[in-house]
View (spheres, rainbow, N blue to C red):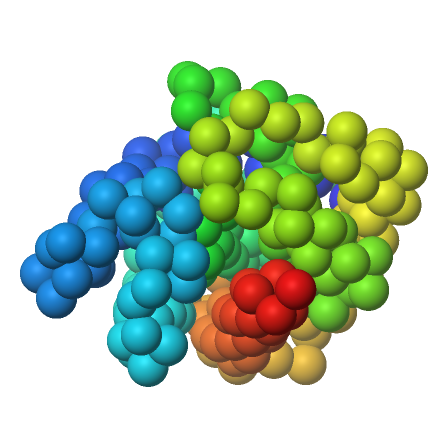
Length: 237
């Protein structure tokens, strides 16, 4: 897999109905009942900056991870992808399934933390896809991605939901050109081979439930913790 195929996959997948999550609807669903007065601030700034208690944010975040990981071995989105994007010469079905669910979880965790919507239009832009790549990089504990996440968080500040910014204008294009090949290499090198536990037949081919469940759970918590640390470090300044 090369970085261009990975970027194309991110752009295509993130707008699929089964993958794309409406930021405002999701946040309202999670916070409107318990904290109705704070909901406007949650939508504007995210849960941390809105003053939602940390223990409740942790509860919502962990529930999001648990829900998405539990769905990862049963819900397939591959049938919604255009021909040629998954399979021989493109992205392996196992990796595609993993990435799709990773993108769903990343959306929820990042929206809770006050990050912007992944895509506002019918088609995701390169800049929006770069942001998703950074989140995926954090899930892989890539140092450049973690630094980029912290930098973006500081720049966005309380205006996180406005999205009138370009990722490359904040962190530089060189970070992206370095990150994408690393992600593509990790995903295409058989890094998940040891967790191929059993295959689940799904539309579009058989994929491994082990690859998705084991790695996705661990990597999701890595993203959650880094987002929490990033918000904490900004709040201390």
